[in-house]
Length: 81
Image 1 (cartoon, rainbow, N blue to C red):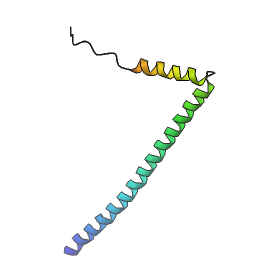
Image 2 (image 1 turned 120 degrees about the horizontal axis):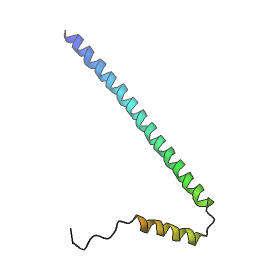
Image 3 (image 1 turned 120 degrees about the vertical axis):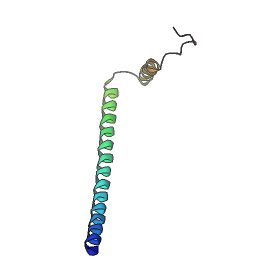
């Protein structure tokens, strides 16, 4: 009975090592896919920016306008309804 238990423990340890290896492989794959997504998004942004017929100054002004539109509105002056 004791040897069977020891065999089971060793088998489980081996299985754990294999599972950790697979986990590492999948984590690397996830990082690679995330990198590819970011790369494609960046390429799309560059393509869009390059397709705009505007000077660098006009693009800067446009980006500032977009940023200001995304800013949250100023907090109420403490007055609640």
